Length: 348
Image 1 (spheres, one colour):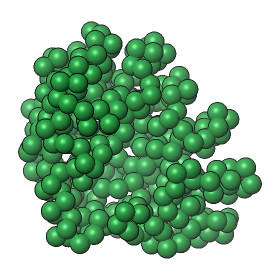
Image 2: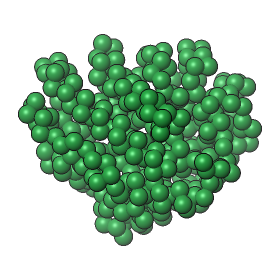
Image 3: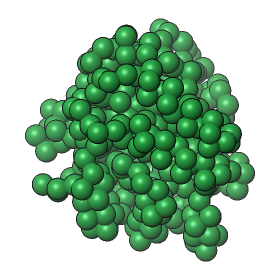
Image 4: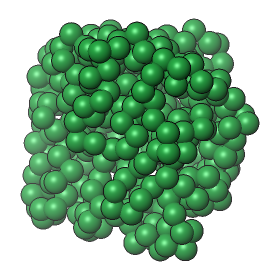
């Protein structure tokens, strides 16, 4: 068992008292850092960064060299699973992810291979092992995967889209096809997260970026239930049962109560969710992570400090808070403002 110099995140996830709340940032390893941009230019493309363990390790560690963060998060992408299934992922500059093949029919779903994590995604597992060796217990390492619904959105659309109309149409026109695809992704995502945990991550997070696109009737069916099945699978395995799970479903604040019953240890909130209201609704059942607007980091250190103070005051003395943004840090975020945010949290 690894002994950590900084245990704030692990304590908060158990809803234990901490000296100050832990803070980390979604996408903290990435494009807002000049050293990341330099490495990406040298590597040539995004996928090379993801698929080269040495580069993924370096990028994961870059923000920890600059900032007093309470966790590292594995540098990877939520679309590694469909890429490993043969859909042909590429990233076009300024256009986001593109797949060479789309999922449109039951035959397409049936043709998807069973994911062999140790073989198809070995580069991710090797990166986890390398990162932990470099961290030497400094802070815990967070691994992650996209939720089945979010990953399915990209697989059905073939690219990124503002409303993923083809995935939402499938929910009405061919729900059995969508359900079959989600079942395959439940199996693959469970295996992938188990692989990450066995390789050494301390916490895992499910990113449900597009759950908020679904209707109140469809969200439990196509977003929450698949995530709940993954959580149940992980909690049922003695090798992964004790690994904390964070569930982040963007735009799904109306579903907080059922999310809290999912078996997850923590819920991530976007910036449209008030911390005090969330705590009233979920009580002490789960840890809460959030919920600062990424746009706040384009203001001033003084405004950032005031916003952090407001968040901490709103939460009060209760255990179980992780300070984070309500979504990923934006590309052109000023470095000094990230520093101001982290310092403000630790100053309390």
